Image (cartoon, rainbow, N blue to C red; front, top):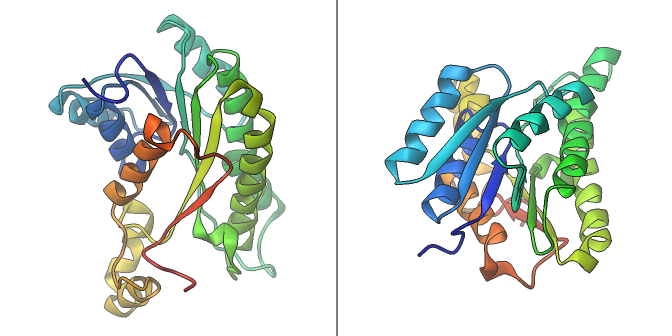
Length: 248
């Protein structure tokens, strides 16, 4: 028996990296996983295979969550799978590194559509399918807690998620739905693979953490598992800095 037996977990952005490992850890603990992806179906199928490899069960759903129609499409698929969600992990997101002098209006809009508006709309839909006592985990970023020039639009969108998390924790407390966020520091995923051409850049990223290394997807997934499980029953409205000791 696992701590998440008989639970259904929706993980957005689950086609690789952190999202895939979250799906695996939740499934390993007994949850049935609905793994969302935007465009990489083959990668999403690899997530299903990884879940099955640990004895879990997963289904995949495709949707572009940058607009409301895509969110409604996602939940039409959720309804076909039973229409129930006990755990929501808002993991889907996008990055942006333009400085103030060159950033375009559409780039700013994209950051807010993907990183803020999307989790809000997904949460809104999920709540109509979530029983009292559920759990919501928002994946944010350490960037939302610190200055990040360039990349300020990304950082601002993640700071908005922190505010959203706090507000929802209070609003949903009457239903005993716990809402927390995980703010990762630099994690070894495809998002930072571009740095690998420069050893100096990789060392600089690693040195940002007191522990002296990049995070791994499983570092984040283990924290999400804790926040989704009964072990964190007295925890809500928290921004967990999963960063190996940044900003100490």
